[in-house]
Image (cartoon, rainbow, N blue to C red; front, side, top):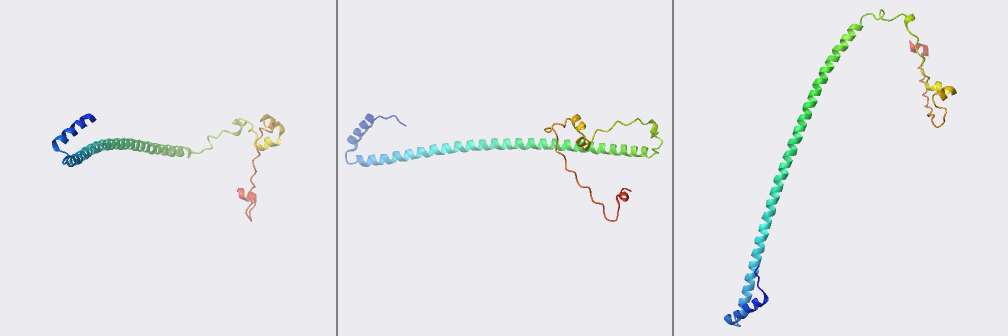
Length: 181
């Protein structure tokens, strides 16, 4: 606090000894020591209170900033939620309108197809010959030539055969020919 050196303290002590005398000097020194200690404690309490107030002020500012940031986030979320809700309602309106148009179109097609179909089918002589169907997996498995054409003659590339499911047993009292009808 004050810049007092040891020699200056010695001078002050010598003057006090001469002025006060040797009998009262110890009592005065003790009293001055107590007063200086109280003064130091008071100064440290004031410093501590000032630091605490500064920290509280910083915390209040931080809390205000956090509350402001929370409000900003909340408003942003609310805006995005409203935008999504509006988009969903627009899509729902569009889908319901499209569904109504599709239902009308299906009803129109169904009504137009209710006319006799026999007039629109060409006679069998005018139908071109169908191309042969691609070989079935069973045909490929049975024929080595078909396996070579499909690239399955290599055992590494050959797929695992699929298990064949058992045919359901016919119910009692009915024959397979009566089930088809």
